[in-house]
Image 1 (cartoon, rainbow, N blue to C red):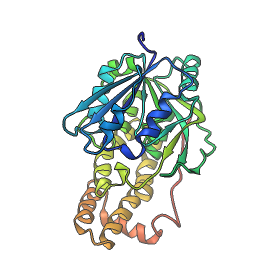
Image 2 (image 1 turned 120 degrees about the horizontal axis):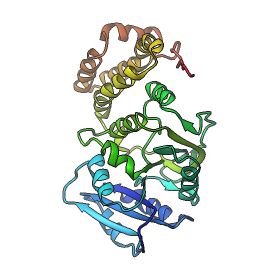
Image 3 (image 1 turned 180 degrees about the horizontal axis):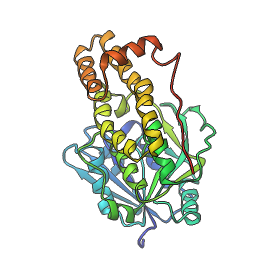
Image 4 (image 1 turned 45 degrees about the vertical axis):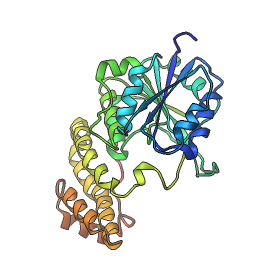
Length: 315
């Protein structure tokens, strides 16, 4: 096998439940000019045995002796990648057979984009489709000025990491994922990429994204880390908004983003997790008046009765 065009990088941590479906779907791609780098991040379940059962020359396996975290493992895998393109993949999800072929063709047509992401269908733990990809009018090529606004209002533009393809040369230019982040390292990376490149959006759903209770982002206390890590990114996005939008951004944060923070605080308080509730209060205190935002939470019934809508300024 020569040097592949695409390197699929798959970090794995205790992923035995869905890992076979994930790996099999990558190996079943109609497009074949790729390698699959599986990075076992110190798994303590049977993931290593499952990975070792494959006999396929396209697979390269590496392992951390101890769990190092998602973004550290991704960086290590990218460092071993030989392809011109890095296709980030996940242990829970399923690629449709035309995924790599469609993404490769998209980048051939749009060589100016530094990364792309595709739409996705949502499946449950048994593979049943819960939600088909909704209609999305985001343009195929998202210019940085628009991408900044989308990410300010909606967070990570891709929604996850398993629907993303990135030029390897982009990492050479802007650096790798930040390893001090546990949750928002992808969000922060997309922000750095849009400072240099447009972002591509493929409207066709090319993957099945699995929704299940064991997902890392749903674990206890992750909300605190999410708020803390996102604060820096939201501030950077705000600074890059068009000047006429910046006053509205403050209003939007208070009536939307921070009300969600209060809801998380109240949920933990009511459920008896006072430690997390207090930590959430202190996180809100970093960005706004907790008493004022809590009052808005009550008055709007957690934002159900009133929300500020995103306002976009385009050229």
